[in-house]
Image (cartoon, rainbow, N blue to C red; front, side):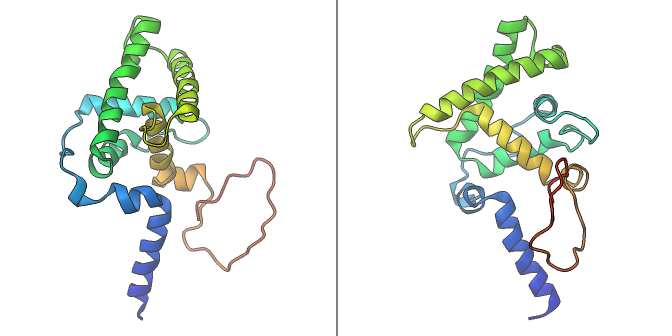
Length: 190
């Protein structure tokens, strides 16, 4: 085996662990993608998803989810990897979130301030946790759970998330199985 083949195989194995078994083995099956068509999301939808993601992971001493372009990542994942049922839950959830914002604040999600966004998403997150605790196995996930999972996946697999929010060494040295952890240290991306 040459070096190029070895690197390709390692990348495939690591990619499978990052994306997750469900998405890798079931979600991205091209034979099952009949309803997903590219271009389903508009630019305003991407901006809306960026704002949702940036409320979940805001800019602090590291860039937030909007800087990592998580909204665009979500659209690709929903179009290419979600089945029809989960796509519908996601699209309907985008509308439900905006309707909940209108009901609570009298404005759309894009028009409220950061504090109101955080308040709304905190309430919806509690609702999603309750739903997930009571749901039957055949029921789909709560729309906010899908959004939150995609936000975390998109952010921490982006260059910004992996190199600035997590500790990262492009070419690690020897394997050290036990490294002391100091409270406040960032997790490792590599």
